[in-house]
Amino acid sequence: MEEMASASKPVFSVADEGRALRNLMWMWWITAVTYNAVAIPVIWDPAQHSFLVRDSTWTPPHLMIFGPFFALMMFEAIVFQFYALKKAQPYIRGDIPITLWVFPITVFGFTLGSMLTNEIGHIFLFREEFFSMPTHWNFVLTFMFIYAVGVPEVVRVLHRLGQLEAKAKELVPVEAPAPAPTSAPVRAGRPVARR
Image (cartoon, rainbow, N blue to C red):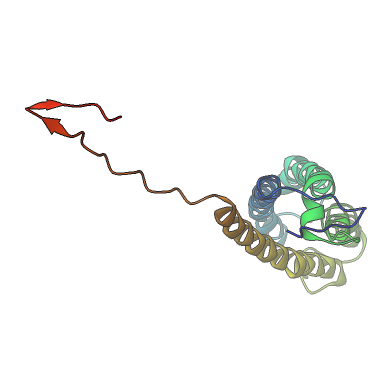
């Protein structure tokens, strides 16, 4: 953490910065679990469309994907965005916060743009089993963007947490060894108090 900060950048303590970055890491892991969990109905969806029914809005995997998973992902994105911009972002970025670009492009672009083009494409243009069609390209690009930007951010924040831990160890005073107990002089079998 820089000791000298500009007028627009507040100076944070090691404890506050570490706490905010740890909270940010927890949010990242919760979001990653959600993204991996949505892969189950996403894999189930094209398999069902390939062998059972044509692509439509009300198939069981669509209800899982468009219902709880996307609602949860959008909620996590909003919470993450505000927390990163208000609490954690001043520690890890400069004037243009990277989260301002990552989450609108990935989460909102994924839920709104990608799903809209995918469903319209499958209803009017292509069957679901043609995975090389352009309606699926935005899914690939979206997740490539998530990993290309998110993984380096996680590595950088973990590195910063290691720096903060080393700084905290420097700031904590080393405890002096306790003095060894001394025995009082003895006269005729009785201890005498020191003067």
